[in-house]
Image (cartoon, rainbow, N blue to C red; front, side, top):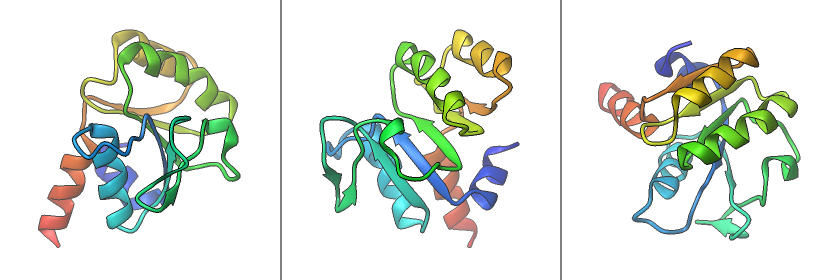
Length: 132
C-alpha cells in the first residue's frame, strides 16, 4: 500500500513519540493529521494531552485500535514498538525518515505487517492539500 493510499483509505492514526514541543517531528505529525480531519491518538507517557487531544501513555492504553501506527521515534525504539503493534492487531505501520532501520523493515516483513518507510506523512499530506 502506498502512502497516498493509506491517507485516502485509513481514518485513525496512533502517533508513537508524540510531543507538545512544536519544534519536534512528533508534534508536527499529530498537528497535520488532526487538522486534516483524521482521528489521532498521540502516544507518549509524558503527556496527558497535546493541543487538546488526549495523549495515551502507550498503545496498549488505547480504547480502540487505530488503523495505522506512525512512529516518531529513534530507529531502535521503532524496532521495539513493532512487536506491540503486531500484538494489538494494528495492521499498518508507517516509519518516517529517521525513524526506521533495516532491522525494523525486516521485523515488519517477518510479522507480515503492511508498512511504509522513509516517506514523510507530513510532506505527503501537504502535497495532497495543495492538490485540492
